[in-house]
Each structure stands twice: as C-alpha cells, then as structure tokens.
Image: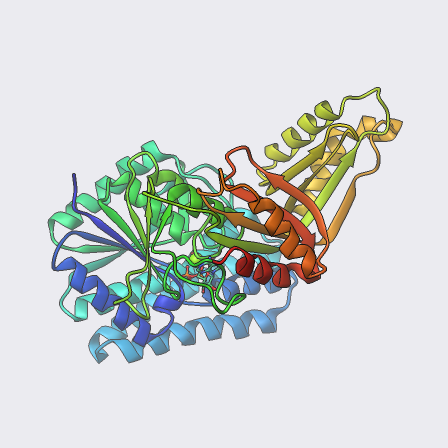
Length: 466
Ligand code: ADP
Ligand code: ASP
Ligand code: MG
C-alpha cells in the first residue's frame, strides 16, 4: 500500500499570492511525512473569464476579448510578483506569457471562424489550471520543496465527450505512473492541473465544471493513493449550502453514497463524479477548509458506523422539468418512457430525477437548464412519429422550477420522514410539483416552484433538525 497523499486545492484556495502561500505551507507540512501529489484548480473566477472571452470571440467582440486577456495576464503576473523572488519571477512571467499567447492563438481562431468548437474550448479553458500550477510549483521550489508543474492532459486519458469527459482508467493508470513515479522517487511533488484530460489520440478534453475534484480522485485511484484531501473554502461537507442556510453544520463523517447523492443533487462542494473512481479501493477522502486547516473537516468513508434520519439538504436552481404524456392507448407509456430516456442518454445528458404515473401514462424528468434544448431536440427526433400522430401529447416544459433533495443513509426505516418534509415545504406555501424517491431510500428528490426553493431548503433543514 502506498502512502501517497493527493491534495486538491480549489480556486479560492489558490486565488491570490497569500492563498498560494497558505496552500504551499499545507503541502510542505504533509510532504515532511509522506509522498504528495497536488492537483490545482485555476485561480478563482479565471475559468469563468476564459469562457467569457471565448464567447465574445465567437461574437466577434474584440474589445472585450482584449480586455479579458489583459485582465487574466495581469492577475497572474501580479500574483507572481507578490509570490516569487525577482529572478524567479522573470522566468515565470515568461511562462505566463507563453501560456497567454497559447490562449490568444486559440481565441484568434474563434474570432476568425465566428465559432467555438468544443475541443478548442477544452484546450483553451485548461490554460487557467496550467497558469495556477506553474505559479504554485514555482513558489514551492522557492520555499525549498521540490515541485514540478504537470499538465493533467498528459496523464488523464478520457473519452471524447468534450466539456464533460469521462476517464479511461486503464490508460490513465499507465500514463500517471509513467510520469509520477519517477518524480516521487526524486522527492519532487507533481503539481498537476485539475479539470483537463485528453483522448488517447491527444485531443484535449475537460471533465465538466468543478472538475478538478474529479481529476484528483481519478489520479488518486490510478496511483493507488492512501488518501485524498480536498481543500476548499468551507469547513467540510455541511448539512446544507451555508450560503443558503446560515446555521448549516459540518458533518464529521459521510458515506461515499451520501456524498455522491449530495453532489449529484447540487452540493457544489464536490464534483458529482468525484467519488466513483475511489469506491472500489475505498480510498478515504477528506473535505477540508484551506482557510482553517486546523478544523477537522469531513471524512468521506465507504461505510458509516451509524447514520440516523436525514443528514443534509441540497438544491439546484438552474433546472427544467420535461413532461411527456401519451394521449392514446395505442402506445404504451412505458415504451414512450424507455424510448425517451434512451434518446436522452445517447446525448450524454444527465437526467436528474424521474417521476411517473402509470395510470395517466405520463412521466416527467428533470435536466439542467443548459441542456434543455439538446434534450428537447433528442426527444422530438425520437418521438416524431408518435407526436405527429397525436399518440403522444406535445412535450411540456416547465422552467420555473427548482430541485430540493434530502439525503441520508439512515432515512431508510425512519417512518414519517417524507411526510414531515412535505409538510414543512407546504407550511411555507411552496408548491410541490413532482417527487422522486429511489428504492434505496437514500434520497428524496422534490421539484418545487423556483421562487420557493430557498425557503423550502431552510424549512426542510429546520424540520429535520439538521
Ligand atoms: P472549490 O473552488 O474549492 O472547488 P467550490 O466553490 O466548488 O469550491 O465548492 C465549495 C462551495 O460549495 C462552498 O463555498 C459552498 O458555498 C458550496 N456548497 C454547496 N452545498 C454545500 C454543502 N452541503 N456543504 C458545503 N458546501 C456547500
Ligand atoms: N476551474 C474549473 C472550474 O471552475 C475546475 C474546478 O475549479 O474544479 O470549473
Ligand atoms: Mg469545486
């Protein structure tokens, strides 16, 4: 068993020279005890700015493009100046400039084409992580901890789903070992870019927004790490988003399944797919606050010793509810549902919750707002004939909705909990539109009117004594 520790730092945890210093201190302390591999996000807000630049390039809005690029450059150069001794700083400024030029080259292509091809977006957006990894590695070296910036695209092999790729573990394991083993043997810390990968034939990909958590877990699994620590800007995984529920509390321990359900249902603290690579080897994960490292954080483990009732409530606001109903006994509702879901899954769109009525031969499901149009196109193509004949009613869409989910392993066998949750929401006069509970009873998902979402989250949090 290796003693490798993978430490992932999110955008706010490397968001300034001061935060990079704090991160480096944590890395150095850990490295005195064991092997360490670091995964970094782009500095906070940089990914948004890179994406915004490309949007404006497509729209031929040169002045915004130039302003943004100069802002991105300035932010990193300024950080380098505050972080590094003069001689080192000059060197790193050169590296920053060469990465900025790489970004400019791709963006110029977009300006010329008036288009933003998905694979170019993935190549360009990863430059945020490449910039932060260069800065953090340089700083580690100046404090005497040997480190090398590494591009995650050279280690993480993925499928070709640009913008939301999945790892191919067999190849990733080989490539990660080929690069990392010799660095670790030389007591050098790899500072790897989060968020990005590449297909086997070298086309750049990314793992979805917030994907650096996923990069870290992919590498932890590939390298058989002993532990993964995810450093963020809150004290761990909490009973609710603290921005929404001020009295949310930190959970000392959650199971892989609970954490995954929370993440899938909107708890931004973890990328939804983070835990999947770790389950087989049961690699323990900690979610910790880089602003308060002395606090214990949350431990995510394979099995909990005890878990009672609901543990946390989470929500998602940018979602849309799609309803399908057959209008004639000629077609079976179950078949329509099967065909519809098959069509949606082929577009790689994630269905967030499903609920149905067998008597009315109707069902509805939830998708992210950004994926609504693609979903509708896929459904209309798959059911064109039935819709044209009137066997299936026109597809209905409700965008004025939000998703609330209550999660806990111990909800199973807690009678009356669902009733209390519904009553708490109704008491706030928030309309419940659809309900879904899987047979595992790990999560109750509730679709409510959008404007009542935050109120409902607070009411459920209070009702469940979280
Ligand atoms: P990072 O940049 O470190 O990856 P993120 O912004 O992606 O950090 O995730 C951390 C944020 O997740 C917190 O600031 C918090 O507002 C939000 N969050 C949402 N739900 C939860 C929850 N249940 N527990 C903790 N944080 C949550
Ligand atoms: N920088 C990427 C994002 O903002 C990945 C991450 O931070 O995890 O989505
Ligand atoms: Mg994140």
